[in-house]
Image 1 (cartoon, rainbow, N blue to C red):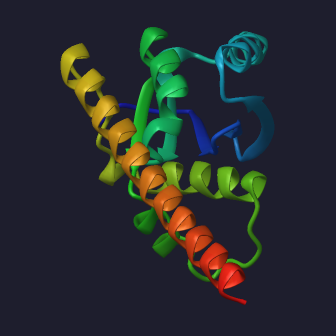
Image 2 (spheres, rainbow, N blue to C red):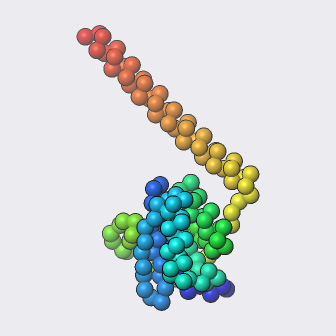
Image 3 (tube, rainbow, N blue to C red):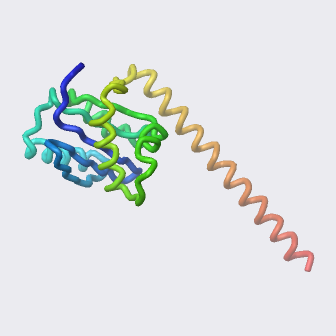
Length: 166
Protein backbone atom coordinates (compact mmCIF):
# COMPACT_ATOMS: atom_id res chain seq x y z
CA UNK A 1 0.00 0.00 0.00
CA UNK A 2 1.19 3.48 -0.83
CA UNK A 3 2.48 5.59 2.07
CA UNK A 4 0.74 8.93 2.58
CA UNK A 5 1.91 11.69 4.91
CA UNK A 6 -0.32 14.56 3.75
CA UNK A 7 -4.06 14.00 4.21
CA UNK A 8 -6.32 16.66 2.75
CA UNK A 9 -9.99 16.59 3.73
CA UNK A 10 -12.25 18.57 1.43
CA UNK A 11 -15.76 19.90 1.97
CA UNK A 12 -17.12 21.18 -1.35
CA UNK A 13 -20.05 23.47 -1.93
CA UNK A 14 -21.26 25.26 -5.04
CA UNK A 15 -19.18 28.38 -4.39
CA UNK A 16 -16.39 27.33 -2.01
CA UNK A 17 -13.94 24.56 -1.20
CA UNK A 18 -12.91 24.10 2.44
CA UNK A 19 -9.66 22.15 2.74
CA UNK A 20 -8.06 20.80 5.90
CA UNK A 21 -4.54 19.39 5.84
CA UNK A 22 -3.62 16.76 8.41
CA UNK A 23 0.17 16.36 8.58
CA UNK A 24 2.27 15.25 11.55
CA UNK A 25 -0.80 15.39 13.83
CA UNK A 26 -1.34 19.08 12.97
CA UNK A 27 -4.39 20.37 11.10
CA UNK A 28 -4.31 23.45 8.89
CA UNK A 29 -7.41 24.87 7.18
CA UNK A 30 -7.93 27.07 4.13
CA UNK A 31 -10.95 28.12 2.11
CA UNK A 32 -10.93 28.73 -1.65
CA UNK A 33 -13.43 29.73 -4.30
CA UNK A 34 -14.74 26.75 -6.27
CA UNK A 35 -13.55 28.18 -9.59
CA UNK A 36 -10.36 28.63 -11.60
CA UNK A 37 -9.22 31.59 -9.48
CA UNK A 38 -9.63 29.48 -6.33
CA UNK A 39 -7.64 26.65 -7.90
CA UNK A 40 -4.78 29.05 -8.66
CA UNK A 41 -4.82 30.12 -5.01
CA UNK A 42 -4.89 26.45 -3.95
CA UNK A 43 -1.90 25.77 -6.20
CA UNK A 44 0.04 28.58 -4.53
CA UNK A 45 -0.93 27.33 -1.06
CA UNK A 46 0.29 23.82 -1.91
CA UNK A 47 3.60 25.25 -3.19
CA UNK A 48 4.02 27.23 0.04
CA UNK A 49 3.38 24.09 2.11
CA UNK A 50 6.18 22.24 0.28
CA UNK A 51 4.13 19.04 0.16
CA UNK A 52 5.49 15.90 -1.45
CA UNK A 53 2.97 15.07 -4.19
CA UNK A 54 3.72 11.31 -4.07
CA UNK A 55 2.80 11.30 -0.36
CA UNK A 56 -0.38 13.37 -0.77
CA UNK A 57 -4.03 12.37 -0.95
CA UNK A 58 -7.15 14.51 -1.20
CA UNK A 59 -10.34 12.96 0.18
CA UNK A 60 -13.81 14.39 -0.43
CA UNK A 61 -17.44 13.43 -0.39
CA UNK A 62 -19.09 12.81 -3.74
CA UNK A 63 -20.95 16.03 -4.56
CA UNK A 64 -21.59 15.62 -8.27
CA UNK A 65 -20.85 18.64 -10.41
CA UNK A 66 -19.40 20.66 -7.52
CA UNK A 67 -16.35 18.34 -7.42
CA UNK A 68 -15.48 18.89 -11.07
CA UNK A 69 -13.22 21.95 -10.77
CA UNK A 70 -11.17 20.50 -7.91
CA UNK A 71 -10.89 16.94 -9.25
CA UNK A 72 -9.83 18.31 -12.64
CA UNK A 73 -7.16 20.48 -10.96
CA UNK A 74 -5.88 17.57 -8.86
CA UNK A 75 -5.83 15.14 -11.79
CA UNK A 76 -3.83 17.60 -13.92
CA UNK A 77 -1.34 17.90 -11.06
CA UNK A 78 -1.20 14.07 -10.61
CA UNK A 79 -2.36 14.24 -6.98
CA UNK A 80 -4.20 11.17 -5.65
CA UNK A 81 -7.94 11.67 -5.16
CA UNK A 82 -10.34 9.63 -3.03
CA UNK A 83 -14.02 10.41 -3.59
CA UNK A 84 -15.94 8.69 -0.78
CA UNK A 85 -19.64 8.22 -0.12
CA UNK A 86 -20.88 10.77 2.39
CA UNK A 87 -22.67 8.08 4.41
CA UNK A 88 -19.41 6.24 5.12
CA UNK A 89 -17.74 9.38 6.40
CA UNK A 90 -20.78 10.31 8.49
CA UNK A 91 -20.94 6.83 10.04
CA UNK A 92 -17.31 7.07 11.10
CA UNK A 93 -17.90 10.41 12.87
CA UNK A 94 -21.46 9.81 14.10
CA UNK A 95 -20.77 10.74 17.71
CA UNK A 96 -19.25 14.14 16.96
CA UNK A 97 -21.41 17.22 17.32
CA UNK A 98 -21.30 20.53 15.50
CA UNK A 99 -21.35 21.06 11.79
CA UNK A 100 -19.88 23.58 9.42
CA UNK A 101 -17.65 23.39 6.35
CA UNK A 102 -14.43 23.89 8.29
CA UNK A 103 -15.27 21.15 10.80
CA UNK A 104 -16.43 18.83 8.02
CA UNK A 105 -13.17 19.25 6.09
CA UNK A 106 -11.20 18.38 9.24
CA UNK A 107 -13.37 15.30 9.85
CA UNK A 108 -12.80 14.15 6.28
CA UNK A 109 -9.01 14.57 6.64
CA UNK A 110 -9.08 12.48 9.83
CA UNK A 111 -11.33 9.90 8.18
CA UNK A 112 -8.87 9.67 5.29
CA UNK A 113 -5.86 9.13 7.56
CA UNK A 114 -7.62 6.41 9.59
CA UNK A 115 -9.28 4.46 6.76
CA UNK A 116 -6.59 3.94 4.15
CA UNK A 117 -7.53 0.26 3.98
CA UNK A 118 -10.80 1.37 2.29
CA UNK A 119 -9.20 3.66 -0.25
CA UNK A 120 -10.38 3.61 -3.86
CA UNK A 121 -8.53 6.16 -5.91
CA UNK A 122 -10.60 8.26 -8.28
CA UNK A 123 -9.66 8.37 -11.94
CA UNK A 124 -11.06 10.81 -14.50
CA UNK A 125 -13.58 9.41 -16.95
CA UNK A 126 -13.13 9.30 -20.67
CA UNK A 127 -13.84 12.83 -21.95
CA UNK A 128 -16.87 11.72 -23.99
CA UNK A 129 -18.44 9.80 -21.11
CA UNK A 130 -17.74 12.70 -18.78
CA UNK A 131 -19.44 15.16 -21.15
CA UNK A 132 -22.49 12.89 -21.51
CA UNK A 133 -22.73 12.57 -17.73
CA UNK A 134 -22.60 16.34 -17.25
CA UNK A 135 -25.16 16.93 -20.01
CA UNK A 136 -27.51 14.35 -18.47
CA UNK A 137 -27.16 16.07 -15.10
CA UNK A 138 -27.85 19.46 -16.67
CA UNK A 139 -30.93 18.05 -18.42
CA UNK A 140 -32.19 16.65 -15.12
CA UNK A 141 -31.86 20.06 -13.44
CA UNK A 142 -33.59 21.81 -16.36
CA UNK A 143 -36.50 19.35 -16.25
CA UNK A 144 -36.89 19.93 -12.50
CA UNK A 145 -36.76 23.70 -13.00
CA UNK A 146 -39.39 23.46 -15.74
CA UNK A 147 -41.67 21.43 -13.42
CA UNK A 148 -41.27 24.06 -10.70
CA UNK A 149 -42.17 26.87 -13.10
CA UNK A 150 -45.22 25.00 -14.39
CA UNK A 151 -46.44 24.43 -10.82
CA UNK A 152 -45.98 28.13 -10.09
CA UNK A 153 -47.85 29.04 -13.28
CA UNK A 154 -50.77 26.77 -12.35
CA UNK A 155 -50.87 28.29 -8.86
CA UNK A 156 -50.86 31.78 -10.34
CA UNK A 157 -53.68 30.90 -12.73
CA UNK A 158 -55.75 29.50 -9.86
CA UNK A 159 -55.17 32.66 -7.85
CA UNK A 160 -56.20 34.88 -10.79
CA UNK A 161 -59.36 32.83 -11.37
CA UNK A 162 -60.32 33.14 -7.68
CA UNK A 163 -59.73 36.91 -7.77
CA UNK A 164 -61.91 37.33 -10.88
CA UNK A 165 -64.71 35.26 -9.38
CA UNK A 166 -64.99 37.55 -6.36
